Length: 169
Image 1 (cartoon, helix red, strand yellow):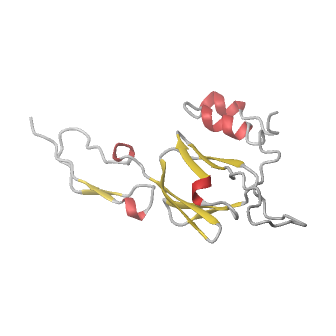
Image 2 (cartoon, one colour; image 1 turned 90 degrees about the vertical axis):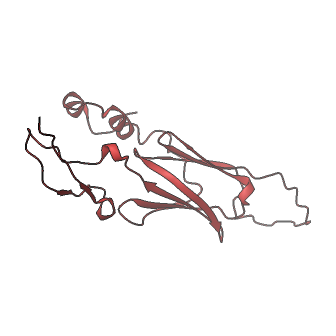
Image 3 (cartoon, one colour; image 1 turned 120 degrees about the vertical axis):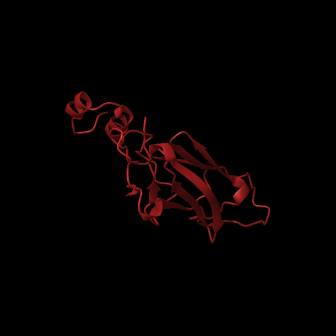
């Protein structure tokens, strides 16, 4: 199944964006019944994010968080508890079924940590752009460059000062 939008003109004029277009075209595949557990995506800052999943009834040792290349997988497996307490449920509305939730992560998104409180699993994410990929000023010719400040697109926290001195030959 493909999306209603045709990305082929963009594919012809771009280099290295194949994975992005594949994700957009296939975004509707495999999401038919994937609605458990409910979650929130929160942007905390320019480079900080949080995913909160409602995992009521699960203990921390029954949850598994795996960060692979550009994919975060959160899964839960409830142990077989055969009503040791002797409860006879008339209606059981708190889901205890196993689940696996996948989140596609952009490049350079790293998982900082996870915490569980009041039935919410919070996963902290941060965008860490490598130093080699941040913008820098390049001097032209043999003229010594003056002190220049370059502000990276990642936000005010990523400001850096580049001093370039050209050697006289």
